[in-house]
Image 1 (cartoon, rainbow, N blue to C red):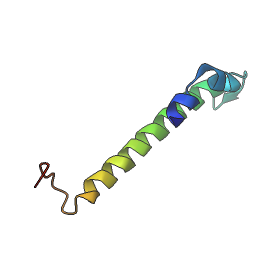
Image 2 (cartoon, rainbow, N blue to C red; image 1 turned 90 degrees about the vertical axis):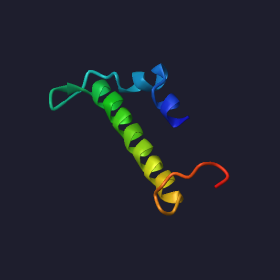
Image 3 (tube, one colour; image 1 turned 45 degrees about the horizontal axis):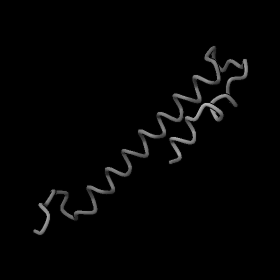
Length: 63
């Protein structure tokens, strides 16, 4: 839900100011920053789900 909100045009347009950071427009840094955070969160969730099994092996349902 947060990703959807952060990537909605009204929110993205807040960062459309003509500002350059290290020669890169602020809006580009914002979009790629949100994207990188989403990947990081997905990785953390995947690792947590893997560790929830205990031994790290996937077991079929009902086993």
